[in-house]
Length: 203
Image 1 (tube, one colour):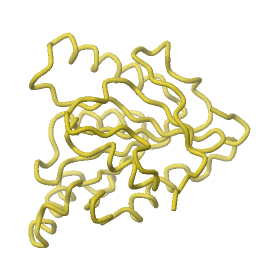
Image 2 (cartoon, rainbow, N blue to C red):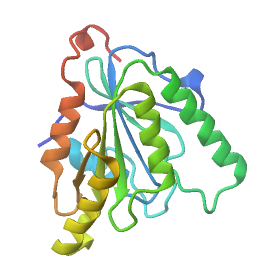
Image 3 (tube, helix red, strand yellow):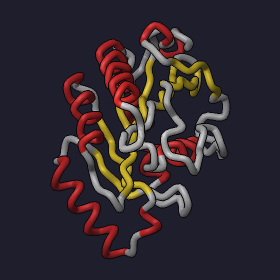
């Protein structure tokens, strides 16, 4: 069952001037290009192939805006992890992210997808720092948890909780087995709670 049955794609942006108007409310999703971010979005929304998935890391190069309901959006941020991309691509990504986080008053929270087998990396921390600087809550999905055994899952979760502290939510997640989907949906709803004027400002 879809969490937001009326959800639909709005537009993609390659620069700040192409962002949708900064009104209503939105939650952004970030993650390394191979962390399973798009699969996580699809699982959370209950919409197959809603966010673009690919076996080739790095296909999400733009800031993609989706309407969830009137005045409420999901923003799929470009995947990061730059081992195989030119320096100018990485620099463009950094400018784009700075423009996004600096200018989005409608941002209500950030969800970061982290491959549970890799752990939290420098770019993940950078995303969390952006949210922290804005005073916005963040929630980390330790994705692909189905590839770990129970003991490994417990260890990974404990390490992440210790590193992130109580201020940042963190959970195990698998788009394959649906582990943690309900918990992630609850985090999304929590970020969007109290948006009293969202319905008056459609995307």
